[in-house]
Length: 467
Image 1: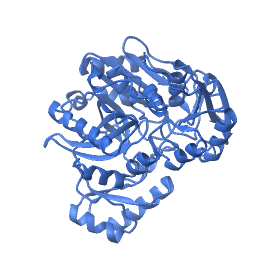
Image 2: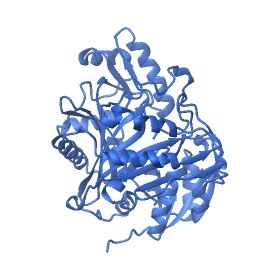
Image 3: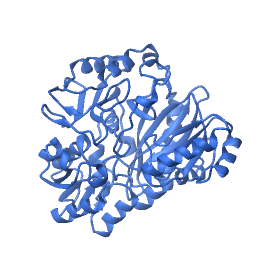
C-alpha cells in the first residue's frame, strides 16, 4: 500500500470546482482542509464542504484570491502545513511559492526554480532548444522594444505571433501580418500583458495557421523519476481559450505521438521537474512536425481527461510529490483505455462570450456509466460576476471516439442549468459538426465557422487569472 502524505492540514488557495476537487482528494487521504474565500463566495459549496474556512477579503480577486498576505495569514492562523494553489490565480507565482517556503509551509507544486525557468516562455523555449526539442521559428528571448523585436519578425517572416513571456490563457496574443502594423500591435500587446502579469516582455514567433494544440501530462518526483500520462488534444478553442479537450487525438499518428511524449519527458527531466506539469505543443499533422510552445507548471483545468483515460488520481499524486514521496506509479504501469472528451461549461452567452452571472434557479447534472461532472454549482447558488466564467466540466468516457461523442451529446441534453446563460448549445453544435466528427479541425476551427457573432467589441475577457 502506498505511503500517505505527512500533511495534516492543507489550505486551498482557490475557489469553485477546482477547490472542491482538491478538498475531496484531501479528505480521501485523511487530510483536513481549509477553504479561503472572498466575501462574495461565503455561500460557495467548497466553503461548506471544507473542514474550516477563512474570509480573506472583498469580492475582487486582487483583494482576495491574489492577496498573498491575507492567504498566508489564514494559513498560519489555521495551522496549515501546506497550500494547494489549484490553477489560475497564484498557481504559477514563484514569489508566492517562495514565501510559502520561508514560512515553513509546503507549496503543492514544482520548485521555485522550476517555476521561474519553465513558467517564463522565453526561458522555457531556451531550455527546449538546449535539449533539442523543436521550437517554432523565432527567438528564444523576450523583447521590451518593438525596434528590436521586428528584426526577429522579419527574419521569421510574416505573419508572426506576439505572446507574453509570463502568463498564458491567450492574454496579449496578437497575430501581426505585416511590418507596417508591427509597432502598433506590439504596443497593444505589451500593455495587455503588463496589466495582466506585470511583465511586458513579448516573445516573437512565426505564426502557424493550420496546427493542432497537443499537450502532454507529465509527473516527476524528487528522486529523478519522470513519467508521462499521455496526450490531450486541446485544439477546439476560442480566442486561445480551450473549450473542448479530448484524448487520444484523432488523426495523430502513433509514431508522432510517441515522439511528442518522449520530448515532453526529456524536457521535464532536463530541468529536474518535480510535480505535475503540462508540456504544450503545436502540431502540423500534414508534415508530421511538432513544436514546443510552453509549459504549465500546475494542475490543468482538463486534468480529468487524463484521470479517466489512465484511471489515475492526479491530485493525490501531486500532493504525494509535494510531500517528498516517490511517484505512486511507474511508466510501465500507465495504461490507456477508451476515449475521453471534456466540455467546459461556462456561464456566458455562447455567441458573444459576455458573462452571465446570476442565481441558479434549477440544477441537475447528468449521470450514468462513464459520465463525470466537476462543478461547485447547486440550486440557489449565485454565480458571481467577479471571476472566470467556468462553472462546470462535463467529462465522458467510452470505448471509442464516435460513441464518446454520442455519450457526451446525451449528457449535455440531461444537463439542466436554469437561471443563467451557458454554452451548452455551443457544445452540441461543435460535437455535431461534420469536421469535428471526422477530425478535420485545427485551432482556428471555431473562428472559421459561424458559431459566434463576429463583432469583437461584444466579447468580454474573463476577470480572473487565466486558466
